[in-house]
Image 1 (cartoon, rainbow, N blue to C red):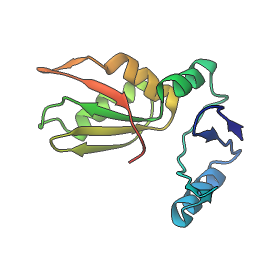
Image 2: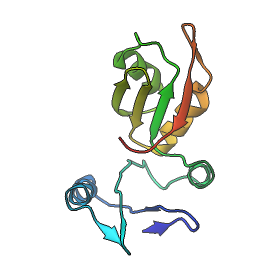
Image 3: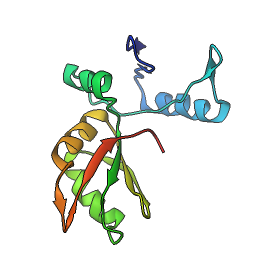
Image 4: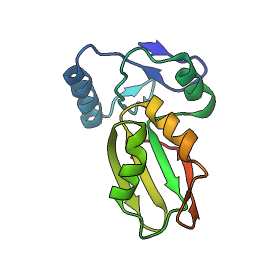
Length: 137
């Protein structure tokens, strides 16, 4: 486990995907607590060690693999957003929130960071996208 000093998160690395998933599932079912505080478990696939620039984004900007996408047309579909975000990495899920925008969840923080960097401010039709890090759904 690697703790991020001065932050409220840490990283656990698992050798097998199924172990990471089992740990995450147990955390969702049992709602674990530490010193009286609820621990929220999340997961991300890392293709290898997390690069220093990604850790810096996490520490300084709250980077996560979850992105809020605002200022989109009500006619925007999950398929359209998927095509846009897949160029940066594997998309785990997309949730359209009518009147609010969408949440796009990629499978790793580096992909989400690249997508945010390239797509925030992009004009899509007559709409200028606003892409920001957010919390898990």
